[in-house]
Length: 211
Image (cartoon, rainbow, N blue to C red; front, side, top):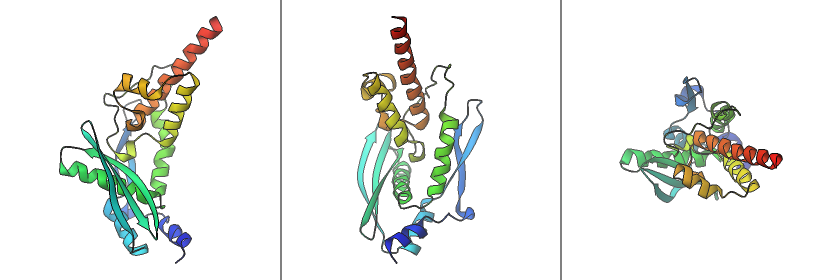
């Protein structure tokens, strides 16, 4: 089977009976919202069926406070893609969870269950957006606990773009305020940090205008 056809088959929607739900986030009114996900064994079964020669490897393990970040790769017909997962650093269950999340994230890059992650991305503005006239509400613990909750690439780009526009070092500002790096933030914390940077930009503009 040509590699393009393999990707097409991997990207087919996951059967609804294999999709699970969990509480993913709370809105500003405190209401809980569910997100869809698939178990790691579902991903492995799909890979076994469609491309039995696939392989995987854990390529990095890094402890971040009470959590561990695992980088893992999946290789299909010579093409390798990576993902990162997080979990508790102090028990085997948490480390296994981080590995499984990393492998699922790598599998998403081949198209597996991508529609589930896309739905969550589409919900991000709704769950992360803050009213412009409200002070940013930072979570008590700003560090992401799961791969699904890790700051998105778009958020990182926004953080650096807004910070650069006002000559602010994003890493230093984040470390000073939240005691972690931008790459370690949860999506909610990243959204609040973006709002904080935007507020600084607005304040600077008002000062310049007043001058």
